[in-house]
Image 1 (cartoon, helix red, strand yellow):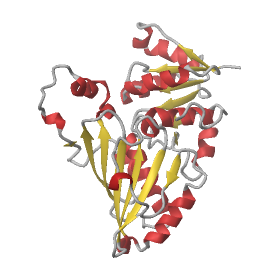
Image 2 (image 1 turned 45 degrees about the horizontal axis):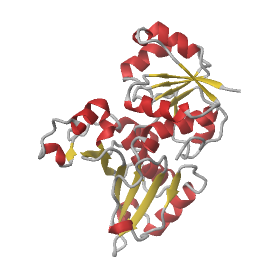
Image 3 (image 1 turned 120 degrees about the vertical axis):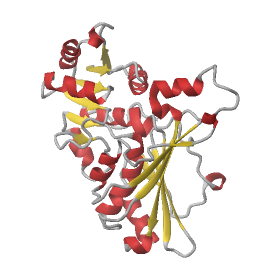
Image 4 (image 1 turned 180 degrees about the horizontal axis):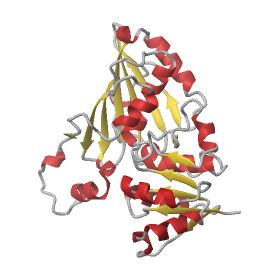
Length: 313
């Protein structure tokens, strides 16, 4: 028996990736709408209300516009920032403690932001397990491929008119006013008393991401061994998150941010200095996978009672 799924905003980067994934699945019937209908909120709402589940791959305003028109029992996955800190919505990171069950029973799930996924995957268990206090001064650096910027940024990086030597050849830091749109969910979902200091960096490669979170062990009041043991246990049963051993030798003596491009997994690496007082915790994943469409499909599977990892790489 097939389930009816509609992707509202299927022409964007995330929507296209989700559509490609679902097109090959015989149990999914993808609903369509005319080009004119996509411009009419009532037409969109009508199609969503005829579906078993809908993805909203839209700007925040468009997601907020259509939601009041929807049946309360139609299952909705929103990929924008509109509802990620809304208490009426469940957060779409199934590997967090208690979250899988919430998603399975939810009709409203907000898919995490890409950078936020990498930070929360580290900070949430640290705080939840008492390995760092809620008022610890967290900071992080995120490095992403340009596909995270959507169609406009992809077009800029892949333009045939791009000069042979250009400023976009080099990594670009941004969000330097410390007001990135992912910060509210990073703080709330991690259970932090304060907003973390976050610097994102975009680089000249298509997809893949790493988020680096330093930890002062004396300030946090813990040890590297306790952190490694706690995080490994936390994700022991996680479907798409795995944890490497403390100070495991790194491939090529470091981590390339595109190492998991094309994958829907997230891998956590933990390193500690020789003095044993500083750690670096790194999440490695694909901004289009566990950071976007892969996470959305994983949540869809749970909401529809399907195999959690069906259709995932």
